[in-house]
Length: 246
Image (cartoon, rainbow, N blue to C red; front, top):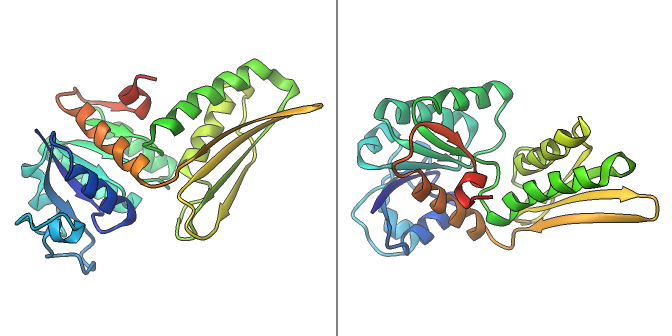
């Protein structure tokens, strides 16, 4: 049984991670965290998730939960994630990070932390998106310089960072072959969960590689798989490619 703590439990991702974790016989929800200003603070976790009373309340401070869990799952903000990461290091706890919007300096702090604890850090936790990273690099290499590349990504209108972390990772995949990040176009409309398309265009033809997330369950399932993957792992910086064996 792997004991997880969910950070950002009342958010869109936190709710789905909690709901699916509650159905997983190999997972125990050891605790949950929210911002101190959240109305979820003090509520029973199970009642918040709609899966029945658990007798465990949502906390505002990860320090109160760190000793109770094996893995922390983070889908919050860069600031909150880095704060919780410090606590995880002190308590030798593994961390799954799905938070996006980190600066280069902040991402460097995560890499530094991975020398002390095991971390899965990925801008997208879905299996399909992580296969897209691999395929994009392969296609970019096969097509060569005669094909121009651009990336289009679309998300809901509440998403704060643009371009998305997934789009940036796709750009890096192209850059490995072409030596530079291609143009990235961001759309923020309605309740779009997440669409990413890499367009390769040459004379007379084009190839489009697209991943569309139909629901947040794809990301939630991936994060739970990542938590299971980290159980017993040595310190290191892992990605979803490691989790799925891509």
